[in-house]
Length: 108
Ligand code: 5GP
Ligand code: ZN
Image 1 (tube, rainbow, N blue to C red):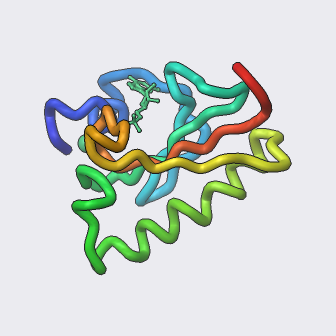
Image 2: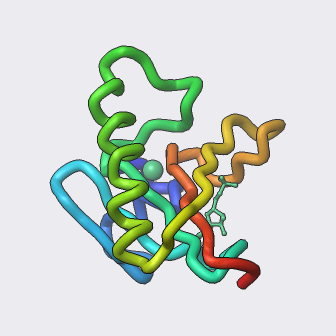
């Protein structure tokens, strides 16, 4: 938990979010500004800044996040979908707690 991190606050329940999945390691919730009809974020409970901050110790967690994408996308009614991981400010990252975007279903 990092106190000034918006996703840690969602994880702690101090900021509400439309949760679609949770287990011991990961949570998924709808993006507040959807870029598509379905747009959710897969977020680890561990606070890691981004992909550049990951190392071999995060391999299982990253794999788990990616494997959840097709499962949750199907549950949300998507036949196909896009995934996105923005990395670094120059890469479009705005929230520095790693997350996988999953979106599809056409324009929001
Ligand atoms: P990034 O640009 O870091 O890859 O994506 C951050 C995403 O988090 C953005 O798509 C943004 O809309 C979403 N987001 C930012 N703040 C909140 C929030 O408080 N709640 C939810 N559900 N999504 C948020
Ligand atoms: Zn965090």
